[in-house]
Every structure is written in structure tokens, then in C-alpha cells.
Length: 244
Image (tube, rainbow, N blue to C red):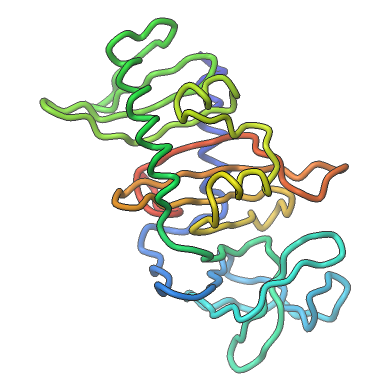
């Protein structure tokens, strides 16, 4: 049970470590926008970690990003204007609004619902426990949490780090894929963000078309590869970064 609880806790911590409160402003519908996730971030003159910079107090608002570029180490930089000054923010500590709602992620969620129903009807090696109306199902491969009502079930959370479980629930295995492979399957994310203290962790968020559900894919960049590799896949209730 310790392993199962840790899977939920660690995945949740990674997902929300760079997130802000549910009251955070929604991004503009069109264009590319950056939301600072820390009160202060280094603001560089160039898209280069060795360029001159100042630690600047960040506004609590979305900033237009007319340009996003990668440096020689394949890390992203966002061009923004703050208080009339134009410069560059490194990717860590920033949430980038990229695309719209995802129809492709919605299809994966439909696959998940079918698999979840089968487990709830016939748990097999999945164990369940209930706390204050929230029912959790856990196995060595993952965990999902639902609110079971009289005539319906509301999905709250699902996570897995296991390739077999990912394929069983989503209909496709994403664990172990590199970011370009993920993009070929799911297209452009709604959002992407990087924790301020770990520039090698990336979280891609795909907000589902027609549902208040978000698919998140957490990637870790390995020393021998400049692309992130998927380590976990999750669904959660709400929009990007919204506590569920």
C-alpha cells in the first residue's frame, strides 16, 4: 500500500508543484501566452542562460509570447514584455499556453472510462477503499479515484507509471515515449510547464474538448537525450493546474 500511496502523492506533487491556485486567470483564447508561476523570476536580455539578467517581480497575469525559441541545449525561452521592458524568460517556472482543447485526448479519456468501468465491476487485483465519499482503486500499475453517486460516477483522478496499465486504460501506451512521439499521437498540448527548481521536468497538459478534465503527461529529460521521456500519465478533474 505504501508504494501505491506514494505513486499518487509523487505524481500529484509533480503535476501541481508549479501550479497556482484555482483562481488563476484563464488565458486568452487565441495566441501563445506565458503565466509566471513564481513571484520572482530571472528576466534575461537574450535567450541564453549566460546573458545578462535581473530578478524581476512577476505580474499575476498572462503575458503575450510573440516568440518562443530553443537555446543550444534545447531548452525553451519565451519572449515577453514586463513593465515596458522586453526580454526572455527561461522555461522553468513558467506555464505556456499553446493550443486549444484536445479532441484526441478526449478519445483517450473515453477509452479510460470503459476500462475504469470494467475494473469497478470486476476489480480483480485492484483494491478499493472509501473515504468521505471518495473511492480509490489501486494496483501495482496505478490508481484512480472517483465519486460514486446513486446513478453516476464522477472521475476525480487517474495516474499510472506502468506501460501495460497505460495501454489497458488509454488504448495506447505513452510511457517511455519521447516528446516528439507524444506530439505525433496527441498533437499540440493546451499547456506546458516546467517546475522552477527542475528544468528537466516538463508537464504537458491537454484539456479535454467538451469535458472538465485534463490529461497530463509528465516527462523527464535524460542526460543523454535533449528530449523529454514520458514517466507518468494522469487524468484529473478541472482545468490545467486547478486543484481537484
